[in-house]
Image 1 (cartoon, helix red, strand yellow):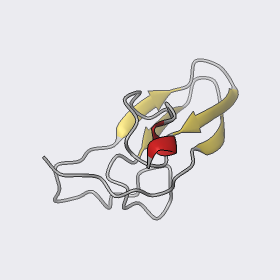
Image 2 (cartoon, rainbow, N blue to C red):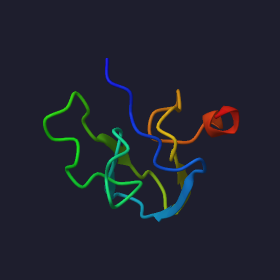
Image 3 (cartoon, helix red, strand yellow):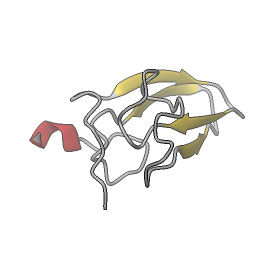
Image 4 (spheres, rainbow, N blue to C red):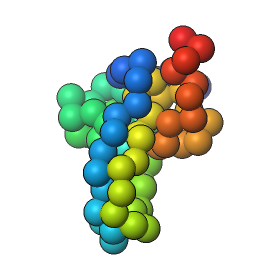
Length: 79
């Protein structure tokens, strides 16, 4: 299995909009972090869909090590 690149050692705070879908970068190579820009092409990685159920601030994982998928679980604190 491939290991993702660490894009940041902190989460990305993003204001999401209710009803919109967001595609989180799982490979760490995207230039538009925390979202996918297609940099994963040709690898085993695929973007992870996040559907906003309400408008609020969401903390997307920047280190790509979260056990909580696209959302930060604090894994960056142990890097």
